[in-house]
Amino acid sequence: MTINRMKPLRLLLTVAPMFVGCSSSYLVLLEDHDGSTGQVVFKSADGETVLDRAGSATRIDRKGDVFQADQKQIESDFGRALGSEPVRPEVYLLYFETGGTRLTAESAAQLPKIIESASRHPAADISIIGHTDTVGAAADNETLAKERAEQVAKLFGAGQLDVKEIAVTSHGEKNPLVKTADETPEPKNRRVEVTIR
Image (cartoon, rainbow, N blue to C red; front, top):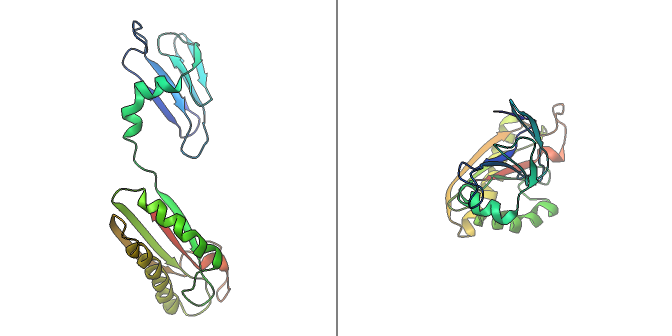
């Protein structure tokens, strides 16, 4: 048996009987976390089977037999495996007004959503990285980026969240989102990246 993956995907395989009185195991393709499905080509000496829709499945002992797996059956057969998947990291970008630690109105409006997201992660591990544009001295920008990141970190502490760790770092002007020449004001580079795991 050979499985060719066309892109990263979520694929489950039972090794137990599929239905009562049936000795077949089966593969089922699931929708990825980003909503995409991808495609898997299952090859054997008997031929090849393509799964390319969420929930499409094939029995291991019957090549070419593609069927739509019932959600209830998927949950019955794979519930424990699906329940053990880690919570996916979430990444947010918060932007700042020029030259200071004041969030833009749009970014300030995102804060409740970000804090609510952190509350869904048990013992959240949060990474906060501050950035600036290239206006000003590099050393000053390093300090400003750290101040931005520390300001955002305080918001998580105030929310009384179950936070395992908050790592605060500064990249200053070193890792711009938009590459620019020195002394260029770029709103997309005046940001803090928040990653919640």
